[in-house]
Image (cartoon, rainbow, N blue to C red; front, side, top):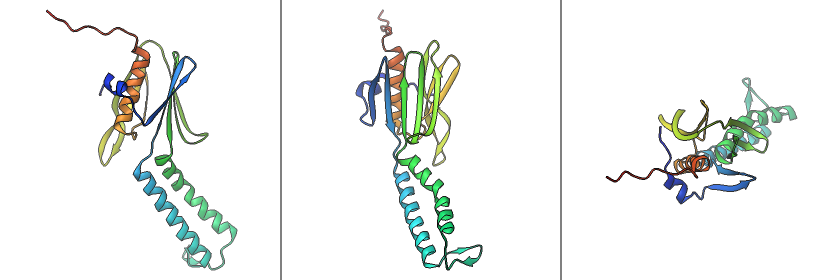
Length: 189
């Protein structure tokens, strides 16, 4: 478990958009990755060659060459590629939107408008934000997620965001909920 530093929030992040929301604040961060772009390019090329092969009568299905493809053949092949394109989009254009308000924290992950997940955490008492391992791995190494805790409940998100963005978001949450609290002065004998 790693606590975010106040320096991470103070220096800011150009990868995170900040906008006011009434009494609260909204932080938005994209989840673009080189792997996602590679995935999309490979899927697009593979899809193009498969559709080209199907239209020329050189594709086999159930051990038979399809010489006269129908609309249904093209439709089913297109349907086959939908999950692959969805995964590529999730790695490249998805965004996290963290809404901080005095009574609730809402974290929205959207791949496309209207397609994604939303987590809500009711703020009751103290809010804590840490970077901690929650099951995700990259190249067999564990990666940390942003973990928000309040009243014994928690939500975790952003395992595959870059480390500086995760630290900035955790520090922003801590600053929003504990920024006006006085800090203890160091003891000088």
